[in-house]
Length: 222
Image (cartoon, rainbow, N blue to C red):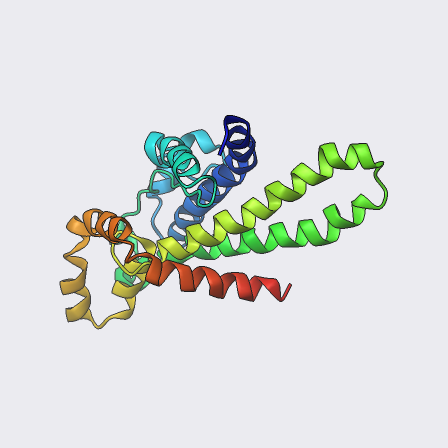
């Protein structure tokens, strides 16, 4: 991929990534707040200002490296996790799982919204815009919305890997019987290393790729 292509793909992906990770994290904090934990609100994390959620590596450096090293085929990022104190919940085990599920569900909702805007606003407007103007405005907007669909679906699917501290791991802890949940949650201290190992060996693809295909197939109905 040449420099011009990298810059173009970066421009098309930057805004969708910022929106995806910001809404993902705010969704966690908002649900936690509704369930009784004010931690995220007290720390100013219930804001749609992406600056409050940006992680230097996960939001900027990693997407840029993936863009370059995968030749634009795979772009992914993440934000600073929203702090949640499960001790503030009435039912910590259940409510933590519900809060965790909010992030991936928000990303699927954003992917669906991107499809709706693309199908019912951008595509119809092509018939009314002069060709030159459509090429300058509608075509880039359409490409950005398509990137938004992929980015949000990949973000949701990756976070559903059932390893804590990822959302899928927290959801699984909430679903397991108490004794098994306590035992399984102990791996969280090693969770990040496990996830890195799964990515490095390609084993994560066996979970993420089928889930991405499932969500895209589901969204294609719209």
